[in-house]
Length: 496
Image (cartoon, rainbow, N blue to C red; front, top):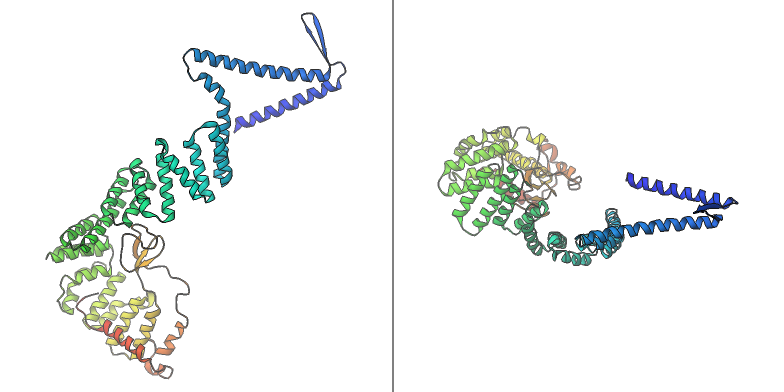
């Protein structure tokens, strides 16, 4: 940059000096006198300017001839490309100028200009591995997918640019939704450059989408090997892939292999809830209940979850509600103040028909975290304690419009899914589902919901205060409510 500025300043100074000199000569009357070998030559103003131009041109020609002489001497001494380099120097200069202008146009978003400059650079340089890349990117910028694919295919034929061509076509296929072809291209690109992080991620995601768990685990190991993935993240995601492989094996009725795979996944990542539940069920099927208890307690310590409680209940499926309440103490003492533990205790007390105990276990969750599950449990408690139907219906009405509480939510797109899966069904993200409360959307409460307490009663009002304003219940709705109450309040043989 500084050298370019210096050259510009020198050029401006020379032009200014020549202009002043020419003006001085035109105004002078005598012109220029030159004496050579005793002979005197006199030039007028115009002749002097012409002579100066001729001298400059002659000097330039002499310099060029001198450069050609040097190149010829180098050729005679064994440099076979010296003369060709001499004649190509000007072409290379023009070609690199066009190339740089094309790259600048590409960076500034001028796709058409970039393509024109790339074509000009190719005429001078004959380097398609460089100019084709600019042309392909400019074509993509302009939305000309056919032109871009054509150029990428040319790049594939060159050993030095094969990876660039394969990667470019792979990205085009991904954008077009052709995941099958994109997977094959990703495998080919990975074979060329196994250290390329983007190709690793694309290949891993496509393999997971196609349930190629063994191939995905190999790709994951390559990411760890080449330093593209921390060891703890690799351990977690390898467990996710092992669990997914176990689920597929289970679907194929290979229960022994599924148990072993689930147990291996749980050992790799004890906090992975689906792996812990599946491994525990594998131990239960083998009659190794102590192993199942140990796995579930360790997972509960990492994060309490309803699936863990359900698996813990399956250890002793025929026990009475009182026996179950006693046995679950070894699980609920781990994190007694956790929300999930309190809900689990409330459900256990409900099953044992200890409704005051269920109310105590629920505590202040009704005020602080009133989601649908909390309010449904509260409706069951009121029902068990003999509250009027209008009060119970009031809690059920609140539960119907309340948030659902923690669910499997994608960290990328906030998509909610019922069951855990290794790949988000919405954005296809790998290992992005976490158990958490989804973000609330403004306006999600149905219109008129604030009037429901006046219509069907609430838990805060006595029955006689609302009887006058409560209309006769709809028979079908009353039947549905009674079915819900029966499902919630009836003693169960399972905790969840």
